[in-house]
Amino acid sequence: MKKYDPMVTPWQIKEYDFPREGAPTEKLQFLLRYAILAPSSHNTQPWKFSVGEDEIQVLVDRTRWLKVADPDQRELYISVGCALENLLIAAEHFGYGHQVAYLPEPANEELAATAKFMPHGEPSPFREPALFEAISSRQTNRKIYEERPIPQSDLQHLQNRCVEEGIWLHMTDDIEIKRKADELIILGDAIQFSDPTFREELGYWIGQGLLGSPWLMSKMAQLTVTYKNISKGQAKKDSEVLMSAPVLAALSSEVNNRESQVKVGQVFERVCLAATILGIRVHPLSQILEIPELKVEVSKLIPKSDVFPQHTFRLGYAEQEKGHTPRRQLDEVLV
Image 1 (tube, rainbow, N blue to C red):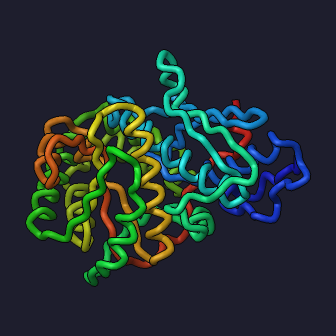
Image 2: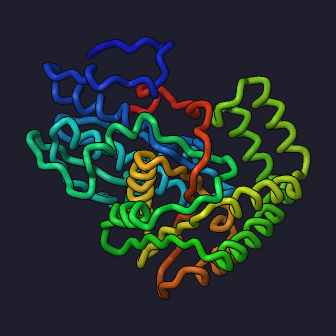
């Protein structure tokens, strides 16, 4: 298999490097170079992969589980679902059909999914070819968004990316819902940043440089977050960010289990990639679902009964972020 220059970042993957004359396992490993570009909670990248002749096992990496912020592991499995979706999009681009088995070994929750690949497959109608090109340009955008509305035709296009049975995408520009969500964001920041264990966990991951800051800035930010309660300043910033967004969105599931969470991750990544093509920015809003009592309040803002809110995010227009957040090299996530 072709050796990759360690100075080249995973974001610089080139389509023409696909090993067309290589062994089946080499080809499947190449597909994973797109899987690892997926978004994840705190950019923890909590995934591992095992590659066989015609299948890839997608596993959760619990050493990267946010035990304080994500006690029920909801975000852990959503993150892995995002990576799975990138994998399937890349597979279809290179001509593979696929079959996915979710949680194929009930006693082994670490194995989130097994994807089996067949050459000469047909692409899925809801995975348009342009999604593949967007994988390497997608970014999470945390900036203040512009006031201009998103056209209904574009919102409908994003809505059409949600095809999984039992998964529901709701998007709204209702100002009252935004205000209620803003209240929850402010309260969520106050609760989380008053907890020393939350600040320590957040500080640790900031200190790893996974949010893209230089080493020294990461370490300074880690110390600030860990030892100083910055809830008021963070709440003000998060409030400005949320209220600037023309659209708020929530992904919910009819059943609250690991399979649904993985599928929510798949839909979210598909929406992110479709939004990237349309020039729409995306930013997750995690804290209002990380606190149980606030999660109950979020469910009241969703105009559909008997569903479980799994992932919330905002949509809008803004200047592009300067660069991508770091990614681990493929060798680090292969088992």
